[in-house]
Length: 281
Ligand code: C2E
Ligand code: MG
Ligand code: MG
Ligand code: MG
Image 1: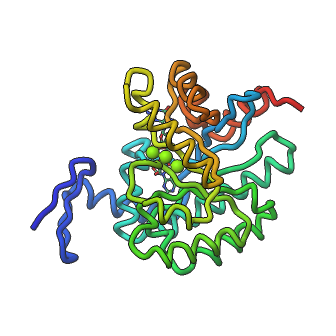
Image 2 (image 1 turned 135 degrees about the vertical axis):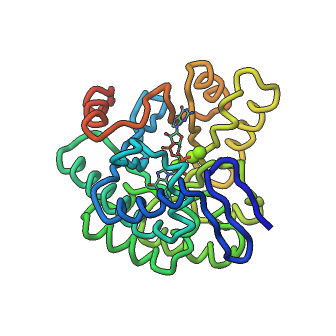
């Protein structure tokens, strides 16, 4: 039986049978070509701490500059990359490129404490992951603690023992780990306490209506308390207005990321942002 996913312009069937629209078939072969070279780039979005107005890091977000279609959103091609298995190569490029940039910034003394990279579920479950991350960090020559990996809850459900083993393997390298889009997935408290992670990234959906909603401030406050009890930091994503930032601060979430601070920026503009940002000694 067919399942139509309105968010993505392709259709997939249970049992491995797949049928795609012409649009997506084109996109798939284009994605194969793009993975071969040159059409991807990384943009970086600052993460700041409202206490001291300090840049605490940046998230690397992939962009695909398609020769005909223009910019294709990762929301469109990452699911396709996952489905076709191209995600391994794309993710490898993203990690290598992110670490290379970080090494360059460290070498030039730019005030950037860390860079975070998204890992999708299939990357997380690939047996090569831990060894690959270790080798990329080593070749880039960056302190491992300055690299953060963002994982969604969805990557870790299923085989919890296996997830904990992978997370421990990543922690052994010394990288930082965060749960992205936190609050939208299925992680139970029993699992959460076993995950050796550093940060919960509060999903944009709780930030969006936080000013008007009668429930969302309490949800955010509860996540902050939970994180504190478990020894995790929190950061809120998708912060667009000063009012949202104020509400988050009231709930003791002082780290934020979003258009209020900056959109994701191409490398040169991101470097300008870093050089202009106020960093107390
Ligand atoms: P995400 O990791 O949750 O990234 C946050 C998304 O929210 C980004 O969308 C970012 O541009 C957007 N955003 C940031 N601030 C705001 C804001 O204030 N308001 C609104 N409305 N949006 C904001 P983007 O770049 O389109 O990426 C979408 C998703 O694609 C990401 O969600 C992540 O799951 C995935 N993705 C992006 N780059 C990579 C990558 O290199 N590898 C993998 N595996 N996934 C990636
Ligand atoms: Mg993310
Ligand atoms: Mg997110
Ligand atoms: Mg998100």
